[in-house]
Amino acid sequence: MERDEAWSLVCEFVKSDSLRKHMLSVEFAMRAYAQHFGEDSDSWGLVGLLHDFDWEIHPTLEQHPIDGAPMLKERGVSEADIKTILSHGPLGEADRVTPRDKALFAVDELTGLITASALVRPSKDVRDVEVSSIRKKWRDKAFAKGVNREDVENGAASLNVDLWEFHVPLVLKAMQDHAGELGLKGQNP
Image 1 (tube, rainbow, N blue to C red):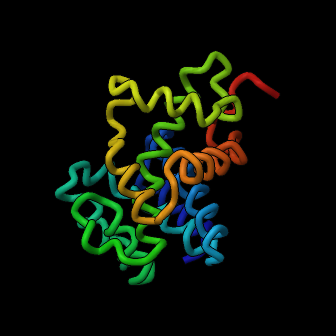
Image 2: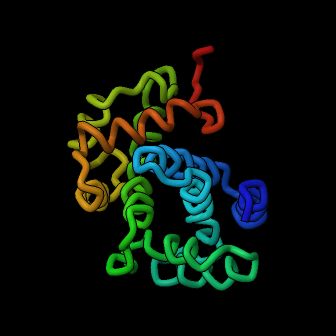
Image 3: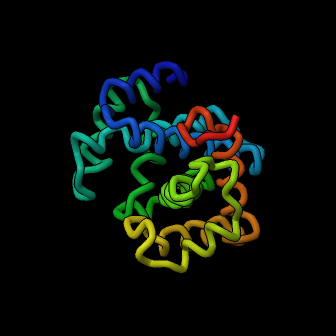
C-alpha cells in the first residue's frame, strides 16, 4: 500500500481531527526511528499512520486493532504491516519482535504526551517544547493521565535506548519538524 492510499483509508474510517493528527505524529516518529535504524522509512511510516485506523469503530482494547486487521488485509495491507499494527497494543506484547514492532509501541503513547505538552504552552507550538518540560510534565501524574507512562518506559527499554537522552528527543524532533501538519505550529510564524 502506498502512503496516499493509507491516508485515504485513514480519512475514510477516522473522523476525529485529533485522532488523525495523533496518527500523523506516530507516522513521523516511526519515520525518524526507521532512519535511526537504517530501515525503510516509508514502510515504518505506513504502519505508524495506519495503527489506529479502526479505533472509532472498535474503541476497546479487546477489539482494537484485532477486529481491524481483516479490514486492512482486504485493502491490500501486507501481512508484515498488519502484524506490526497488531503488536502495538497491550495484547500484542509477545508479538513485539522486530525493531519496527517495538518502535510502534514505544512512540504511540509518547506522541500524546508531547502533544499535550505543546497545547498547554501559551504559544501552543510544539517547536517551543523542550525535553525538560516534558520530563516535568511526566512527573505530574494528573497531566495527560491517559498516557501510559509505563508503556513509554517499556517501549524505550525494548529498543535499548535511553528514555530521556534518546527516545523523547527523537520523537519530539520528529513532531517539531512537522509542526504545521500536526496543527501544533501555534501562534509562531
